Length: 235
Length: 297
Ligand SMILES: Nc1ncnc2c1ncn2[C@@H]1O[C@H](COP(=O)(O)OP(=O)(O)OP(=O)(O)O)[C@@H](O)[C@H]1O
Ligand SMILES: [Mg+2]
Image 1 (cartoon, rainbow over the protein chains, first blue to last red):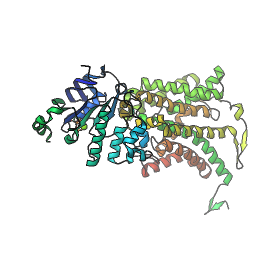
Image 2: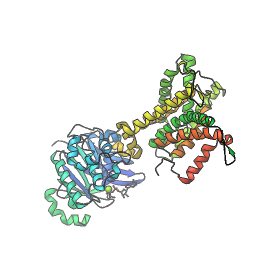
Image 3: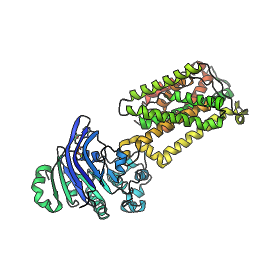
Image 4: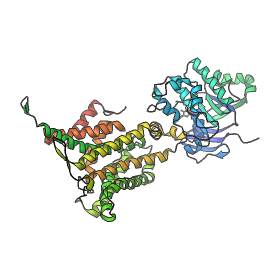
């Protein structure tokens, strides 16, 4: 079997003095869609940030496409082909919608979607191209935050709580978009709180608690794990 | 006619004349505060060395003419490049280590840099100024109708306006500018998109410093080139930046030009106040709008 596209092992991360990740092990294979679940404060956002080298300090190993990233600056890690959609969406208020969309530079040549394809998938963004990014509705901002990393040729998408705080119809639309990205061959690591959103999409699931992975199973094992999920996540 | 409610009004040509001369000073304020604004926006560093870089620009031009025969036009290009490169080196070696700390440290460091630069040149050249000749093509004077103004001063206004406009265009209308604006808002995220933010930061500091040096070369033919020429100017420029709003590009240009003219106007109306009017306005602005006229809170 070839090496997974993302391979995290024994990952520790700190914010200043506070030790947040305590030895995380997680892999995402090429073309796979993996969901990282957990309670508030479990360390899921920190895991994504640590992959990109954005936490204060980190220890352990994070390999992207077989390349060890420890010691690399965040922009070098991103250029291994990562697209990051942060929890707070990260839309820039001094940039127009289109400038936000065009901001991320190419980081690879896999599956780069053209601007036309992106506008076809996100028609609202085309209509609002000239408005400041933060004038968009919450749902539109979330779409923008996902859309702008599809142009870059990134092969690995790190998506943090993209369904959070959005109306059900928009969550449904996002679900369709994620599925179509998966069909296009993107590799996705999705952090979610909304289990119902993530459950039908993912190939595999990881459950995180206190900065460690406590459980890990496949889509096929999902139904037998409902009791455990109930206990951990209250779903 | 020249009297309003018992107060003697100065004649109109005198008012217009002083305002025009004020616009020349305002051009320097605008160029200098523009560089400060760009640097503060991205680096969150109050670049106290700005006056020293302005002075170094003028000195570079003067020394290049004296020792290498490099003329004004070439100096206008080369001095900002050389001083900007020095800025990049200082950013890489020194300033870089202070990011994320209290902005006070950056201010102290750059203040120290300016003391070192001024001290070294004072030691070598003394405090008396050198004159720099007005280039041949800009000799002479122009009759504006209400005053006769040296052509060189008009050139200063025009050149500054063009530089400010080009800088504004680069920042507000280009891809590079969009990257700079985004990094000003959230540098970590921009870096997580694969953009080399540390390089962008160095280049931005260098560009801001180069603007100061450009102002220095422009000023060389109108003032005495001396080691301390930047130290008093920089205080006024900081007031201009505070009035315009820290980090605001448009604010720095508009308030630079505007305050230059207000200073000129004060010279005819109440000359005693002309050197403090900018600080008075700053105090009023701080009370009324602490983020400055164009600043965002
Ligand atoms: N910048 C920070 N500085 C210090 N501690 C932080 C910082 N960000 C997060 N933490 C702490 O790290 C722990 C993990 O946070 P993280 O954001 O990774 O959780 P999460 O699983 O994404 O949960 P949620 O998004 O629901 O808050 C929490 O205890 C949080 O308080
Ligand atoms: Mg989170």
